[in-house]
Amino acid sequence: IVMAGGCATLLNGWGTGDDLAAGIRLAGCKLVLADPQRAARLEDRDCAAQIVTFSHGGGPAEGFGELQQGAEGTELPQLGPDDLATILFTSGSTGTAKGVLSDHRGVLNATINFAAQTLMVLGQMTEAGEAPKHPPAALVPVPLFHVTGEVPIFLQSFALGRKLVMMPKWDPLEAMRLIEAETVTYFVGVPLMSHEIATHPERTRFDLSSCATFAAGGAPRPPAHVRQIREALPAAYPIIGYGLTETNAVGCGNFNQPYQEKPDSTGRPSRPLSEIAILDAGGNPLPPGEHGEIAIRSICNMLRYWDDPDATDAAFTSDGWFLTGDLGHMDEDGYVFIVDRKKDIIIRGGENISCTEVEQAIYAHPDVIECSAFGLPDTRLGEMPAAVFRPRPVRDVTPDDLREFLAERLASFKIPQHLWRVEDELPRLATQKVDRRTLRSRYLELSGNR
Image 1 (cartoon, rainbow, N blue to C red):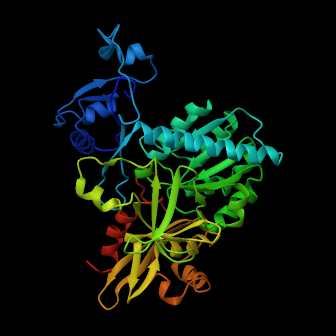
Image 2: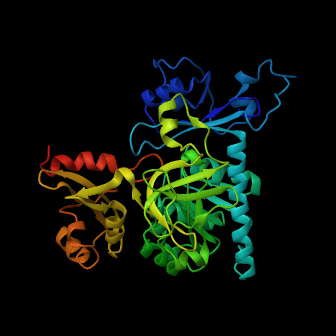
Image 3: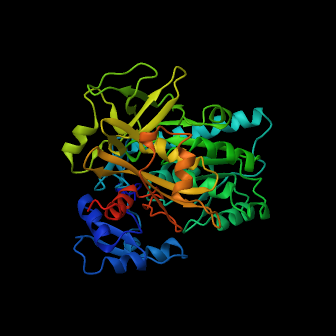
């Protein structure tokens, strides 16, 4: 698509027909490439685009024969850095998804940024005598329509000559089987994925020693998990990255030994392509240690939100800083610490409570697999903290047990007043982040506030 001079618009393949049609209409797509399942969802939907259906498992001539008819001898256009490359959609975790428009300059710089980081880590591991012993291979348990799948995994793999091992759906047992069978050297997913591998009761059945790196992104990794992963998988290092769809995933990263030393930090800015600042409400940079909004200025940043000038203006300062919506601080060494999303701060009687802080305290319980914290309305105090948690199978962790555990780790006003135990996996967005908005709506009624 991009070699032909087009702008590739990556849609959520798990979306409904209405979701897909809305994205197609928003981006003004003229051509839609879809497999039979997605094409069927678009039947009778008004998307004003030609739909070309292809099947999986065949060659390009079979899948795209309709497009290639009469194309012999067609001269491809000359592409420049200012030509449009991609439109990706935000996860929608804080509202309606927006189309993020990037040019070739931004996407290519982002790709090379990640390739340089990989080479840096390889150099460190080689010097320490811990270099991977197998050709590079990445397990792909995240969707390629999301920025993590598209840039750090898919495009970077072309730059590195790295094999991609695809997973259609997350399953820790299948992931371990593939790591062994395909001698996977690199794993990346949301934090819960690598933790599920490290704590899986059948982990020792598989040889996971080829995998030198267990990377995470999309959410902070609880510090307790960093230590657990390193202890359970001694041949590998956990690492973490921080970036957004709007920055083509570029921001900062915390790698190997420094991550062990500062497990609650998402790392330093990705130099030289990325600057990070902590800004106050007036857009002024704050000194180390002071909390504010995390802002990123980078050649890798998006051009704008597609067809949404108001959102674009609100997202950038006059001097080019992209406002992430994340709150945090930076220490004297330049390491960034994320406190929470601006929209995920619970304000209880004037006291600010971080959902992330509450979740990390819950995750410190050895028998909790996953959790999510959020605020619920309270007539007297405005909001009260609430949380949902899922314990390990056959572990009898009650809400009262968890409150007693949290009493030693959180101030009393931060301990969730409402705690629900569930046995099933928490709902997730297509990016595999926990869908906090859906959980809040679901438990709003159970709390008696609706």
